[in-house]
Length: 441
Image 1 (spheres, rainbow, N blue to C red):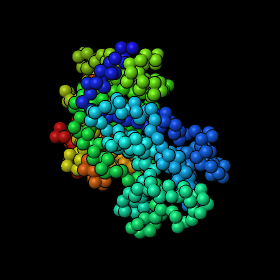
Image 2 (cartoon, rainbow, N blue to C red):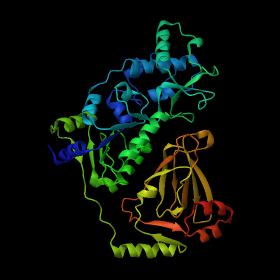
Image 3 (cartoon, helix red, strand yellow):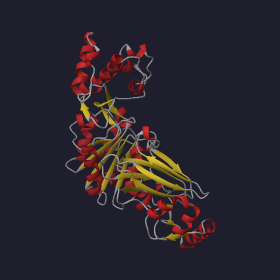
Image 4 (spheres, rainbow, N blue to C red):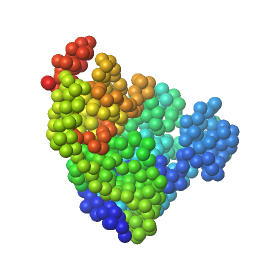
């Protein structure tokens, strides 16, 4: 057994709690591949595959069907095969053994509902699931509906050739057609799941929290970004990632991370049995050397040449503002300057308003969230030299907004605070915003 496996097993054993994160790679390991064009696709969708030239299951959910009967036939056939007939397999058994009796939460972007169907109780489905429906006319006002039985009935009538428009799901409140509650501008996040997940993170983020990431590639930052930043924001957390062929570990958490470039099943077998299967395992790695005092001084002098109206505040971890940011209506972030360009993403909770003041004198706003009808975006990139602050829009009833932002792995831990007077002089039309959000500098 390799040293990395021994370390990973100790992290699991010593963990106060386990946060499991999962995406498409986990579903694929279970036999559900949303992107595959294969015989299974034809077995599931039947005649609809050729009728509409559907290349994969992902397209089946997003296809603009000419009639609602065929749309719900497709939904029901998928739900019957992958939900009604679903039987938990080895991966779920292994996962239960790893979690054992520890406090846990599962955070997933998968919409197949498999974790709940495998009797895991603490699950946050950030992009909904295909067994739930929402009113197409009033998605927020009329609540979420459990479609499990209706989808099964639609499937049976579809197979019998007796399906009619009267059998399709309608809103009990207004009679309008229902839609699936999956990733879209109308997605309704399960508030009970959200609150349970938030309470879990609040309770264990400063303790020995183990994040076990399953099948999330480096380009999928919806969950990977915030979860790795959660590790970076603390000094007790550990991170184990399993993703065949492409393991991505930010350097800033490399000392507390282990990666398996293997199938999830093989990695689970090594972790639970201790067998050496010869898997490709990396980490932990030694941290990158910090800047020396002379290098920090040189950097400071350089920054002052470029930004003469800004001051430096040392001794504050960047993670406290820009790695894993939680704000609420009464506690917004202060305006601070980005030394390097950063990608910021909406994680969960309420939407957020981002105020941006560029060094060439431009002011603009961005809303981070999931409601495309309000021109909200899930993520965006802010150029270096931009002064930025975040406000909670208090629109989803969560009581807070959680955002994530990237930082360079060799950051020296500085935060640049703009001088309020200089900023107002440059942006007089935004004086009210600056007075409200800028620190007294």
